[in-house]
Structure formats: structure tokens, C-alpha cells
Length: 123
Figure 1 (cartoon, one colour):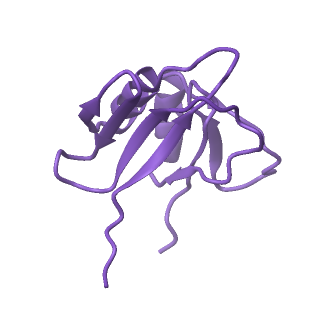
Figure 2 (cartoon, one colour):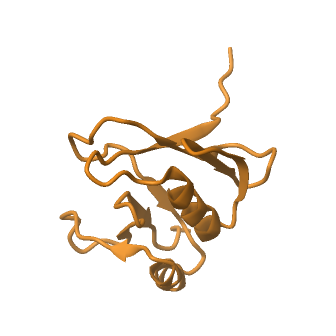
């Protein structure tokens, strides 16, 4: 038996101020340089290339977030400082989640979903 990792689902939830999975998905597509493979009012899927997995699927749901997210994305760039600056200019914010002084930078997308920009890979 084998499994193929198809995608990570990002739920868009906010009962007070409904969020737009299309806008968030488009933000990530531009941030990553990925392509859109599906778009509707309730769902927006992107991939590195049309036939390459895994992808990210942004889906609107009608329940509120009750706890801190237990899943986030980590990215390892060639140049951490340049990518942090680029993503910041694109609308991401640096956030402090109690990480202290680490080699990675914690950021949040426009909807507040946290992700990390890692430092250089150890040789």
C-alpha cells in the first residue's frame, strides 16, 4: 500500500468577518510563484505546477477557530533575509509566538496563518 501526499487544506474561518479563501489562496500563489488549479467562491487550490503535488487548498468553513493552529508551513529559502523582506512587502507580518531567539522567522499571512522562514540548511 502506498500513499501520495496530495495537499494541505487551509480552512478560512471567522464568524464575525468572513474571510475570502480566493483572496488568501491568490496571496499564497503569488508568494510561492505557484499556479491556480481550481477556483470557486468556497475553494481555491494551488500547486507548484498543474500536475505536481502536493498543493495547498484554501476552503471556507462556517465554524469558528477555537484553538491555536496545530499545523503551519515551513519554508527554507536560499536567502532568508531576502525572502522575509519580500514576503513582508507582499503583506506578511513578522509575529512573536514565544519562539525567542531562533534561526527561523515566524510570519503570518494576511489572514493570520503562521508560517516559518527557516535559516540556511546545515551542511
